[in-house]
Image 1 (cartoon, rainbow, N blue to C red):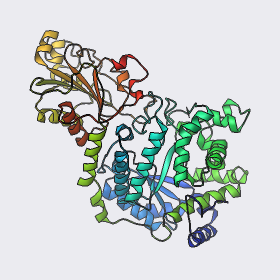
Image 2 (image 1 turned 120 degrees about the horizontal axis):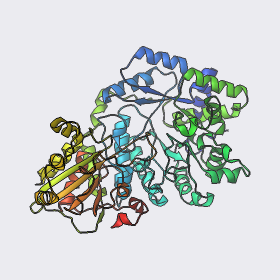
Image 3 (image 1 turned 90 degrees about the vertical axis):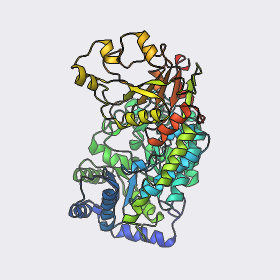
Image 4 (image 1 turned 90 degrees about the horizontal axis):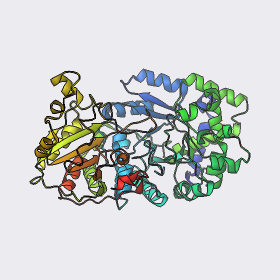
Length: 580
């Protein structure tokens, strides 16, 4: 039986009575529906459709996708007001309030918070996330990310992790949670992605990822973070589509390789390690079930019931709700999901709702609450984060600071995520960087891209003079005093490793100029671009493509502000030449 009086629930007798009475009043369909978190996109809000969905599936939780702040708040309000049992409404807020809606405040990435000397940035990420998410009706945060960034090739957690050091990650996770609780005391937090991403280079959205640490080393690193957060009273943990073979072999001697499963399907990881060894009594919510880390290793008809049998209390996202409910019912009939397992899951889900006080107050936000989203105070925190976190990774030729009076003419090369031949047209970040440099006193020439060149010169420009606006190295050296290579590259669940993608012509963007003219490399996102730009002797990690980050970056480039961030060794990508 789940102890609802113990950590992390701490329920009173009255709250426990509500949990028991509510469960006793449920039909089987209502009980099963409580175990699912459904995704709802926001093309528009149809109240009749929402009521029908709730009355049909009786879902326990909601995640939404898309929508401006007013529409998202409206939809969440309709869901919460029309659900017989209060809903857990969840959000991902890795970087602040930017995870809840387009108008939300990007404060900083976890990587930036890890680069800062103090925990203040991590706290402000959580604080802003809590305030802005609560304004939309959120009561459950799918954060903090407790992963350790130990493999520089791993780009799915590159900026989402506070770093490689377990003590730092635990400290920053605690600061993030303090921020959430100070902003929204009745919001639950979730550490993810157990048993820990960042060891493998694979993205669990696309492949089954493995954490290949030995069991003792895992306990001293990832395990240390989870044990610390559990001891603090963390409400929820999200098992990922990630295996931990050493632990599976430890708890199940003789287990075959083909039997090693991701945590979401692994009873030895959830029941023996997480609940047993680490003593976690809270809610376990699976990572998204459509990820290949789950769907690629087992038929869905088996995975749905076995996820609960392994120890998960809630299942994140249905494929087809009618089908998934039938899979779960069949699992109950077949004895895969026992009555005790179902009862424990229900008690934890309802226990979390009572812990948040939802049985008495659903905390439905009002339109006026939206004013906090993107407010001046939150953007002030973003500016502070940029000042504290932006990191000078290397400056081996002592180029910085750069005085616009002596390096007036700047050539700007902006590298974006999508195929660069047409990515730049009207890009607001390139414009923002250009304007900030010009405001500082530089005369900026933007590197032309294939789109511009096709318009001006036809589809296949070949002449160097046409492409670059000069015809020789001598002319380039005479024309430009400094080159800025600004990389704004990011990917999500499309490829296992996200790297730079240059335009097709080698002589237009690629850094042939680094030994001709002083050159500064700048990343506005990932921290591992030196693997592709090792030959740049000055490199800065600026962490964010926002106004606050770009302005702070230019101040540091020109010596108006010192660099304060600290780089971890992963930025050098395990290579000696990246340090030169």
